[in-house]
Image (cartoon, rainbow, N blue to C red; front, side, top):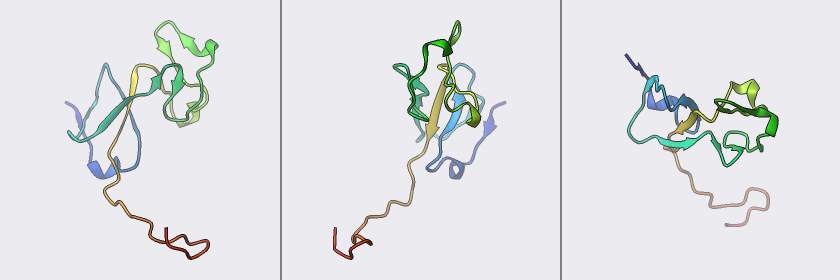
Length: 96
């Protein structure tokens, strides 16, 4: 049985899910992207060093403190529901 996850936990955040073994029942409107794309980590933006390539894929050494991220993972998120427009530059008080 898959775990239910509240959409409120995904707004503006990235959740790591394994694309081969999805454990969460995610809302239909989530945005999915590959965690490691063209040799770069999509979570921290670092280029993956050659020594981090494993027989089963690659992993990001740079952001390992946030949790292991491999080429078998996807990052899922929901767009922030509160979209605010900036009408004034607060530094100089002029309209944008």
